[in-house]
Length: 224
Image (cartoon, helix red, strand yellow):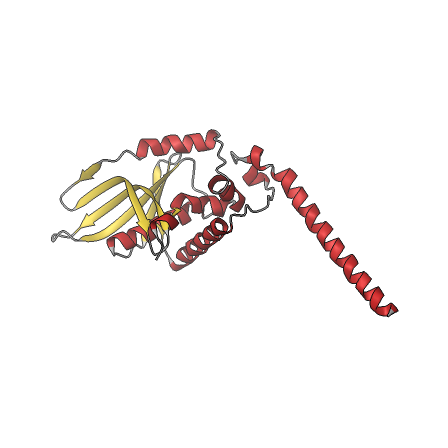
């Protein structure tokens, strides 16, 4: 069980899965720059994250619900959580819905974030959740996400990777990817082409020096 001061933001997992260096720049170095994509996402969540309640007899919607899991060491906020109740008042079903700008992605970044919310809700309500939903603004519809063992395992791995980076305090080296870097708001401060090249040059230099050392040792051994 983790303490209150050790909780990782659920949103950080999306950063780590997209780019571990991006996570470190934001959360370790406190470096953040907004671009059109982040501004649109923020505006969408500002519209959604207005806490209010809609309910019927056995159904309720909770917007902007704060969630956490001491077991997994996670904390965050769900855009929308839909709750179904039994006649006796007990919760029988919980459905988290995460709102996103754009369209459905091929990668798992959104699904991992949704699964992390499920981890928190399962602990809070002592219930198993096998389904969540993602709402993409450009598609104007919800997409169902099955919370299966494969997604749970991947979310667990990303959580552990995020915590490892946080505990180490070390920002991973840059690796340029046109698909990712050209859309990232931190590309100017990250400078992946420059730092990535320097990192590779250092690796080559270290390998060369190690090889030269081995060769010298071999020559010296032959002389003696």
